[in-house]
Image (cartoon, rainbow, N blue to C red):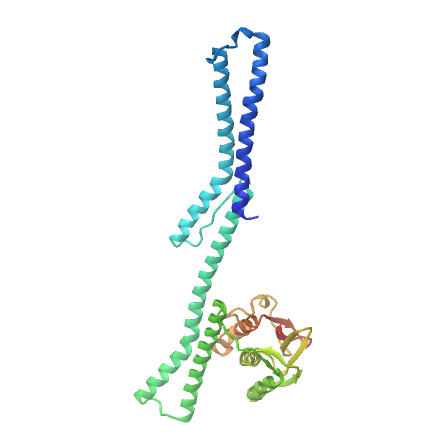
Length: 352
């Protein structure tokens, strides 16, 4: 039952009770009044249309009692409905003026529906405040991530322009690396923005993921070896329905995450289909993820202490958020699990 329907039901029931009480007062009270009057003072009963003074007094007393009952019930009902509504209205004005910390209040006397309205309003206001805080955090984080490569590019290009640096292959390769980093950051932000707005489009097709995974492993194999990671593959050849380009993007992000955070040792990429669910897992051998970080590991710009200590070498903090966005776009999810060897397993799953 909706809050409006519940509130309407309470008002109807209350007004019906008031009407019934007034009718009973008039009808039963009149029976009792005339019974007593005829028994003890029959001469005071008027035989005409004009009531006697005693009958007129009874009418006035009945009217006053009916009004008192109506006023009492209306006051009680208004105290249970109006204060929460007034609190919500005042808080809405504060929200409209930009005060996102405004909250409505209520007490134990409020109707359930009115109390539910206050609760829903406070939940909405809390979400608005959290969204504003996240937007401010995102703006600051994006500015921070853009500052380093832009500063490097600006300094190097200015140095080349002023003749401080001599053009060289290494210099151009360094500039190209910064440009690629900017492009990757922009693409990650685009993916997250499209997913959040519900416009991340997939090109689904039946794909043998084993071949796609092997191509990604071949591309990043040298970088993994340079980081001291030994890559092994455990793949199923069964075709699944997915967007192969997006799955490659997610797998690349997981492998880059392993290169940035995993200790030297084996890294296993596995793919299997079980009970109609496709799973792709990247598992390393350590050092693992802090338990307090696991619930928000897929949030944008989340990093562990080790990554913060490395500063700019720890990645942008968007890779795992992109993985989650791609998994959700496929109707699935991404999970962070403890690995048997003491490391971490990142698992993508979606309906096959």
